[in-house]
Image (cartoon, rainbow, N blue to C red):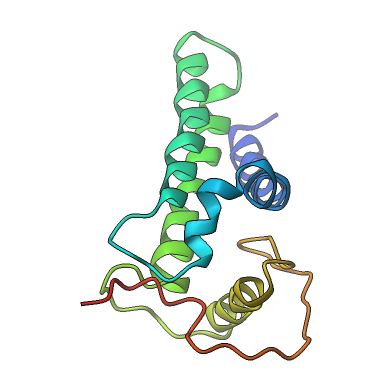
Length: 153
């Protein structure tokens, strides 16, 4: 299989892994860490930040396997790492605006923000990050923006 196909395949498969880990780990036995992400922020960092740090270990292990000569592992490791970088940019910067950086405007990014806001309002679907396909449009009321992760001053 070509390196490009392995890279793209690993990147796309990570959306499935992201959905599953968000649905069954973060909203399951890992809720003790993830709960901080659904609550108003109390500081610059939250317990939920331990998830991406933990998940990055997978990328490190994949690169270690590649350095040991496992065939095809370099593009797989790069695809998984590229997904992690996309997650960082999209989830933390575009959706939650955790850093004061300019965010481009597009229908796709607006769709992602709205889908993630639905998730924060109900702690249910959608669990996906780049393709949040399952939506629950029941009306809800909230007193605060469910996506606002900015630190109170």
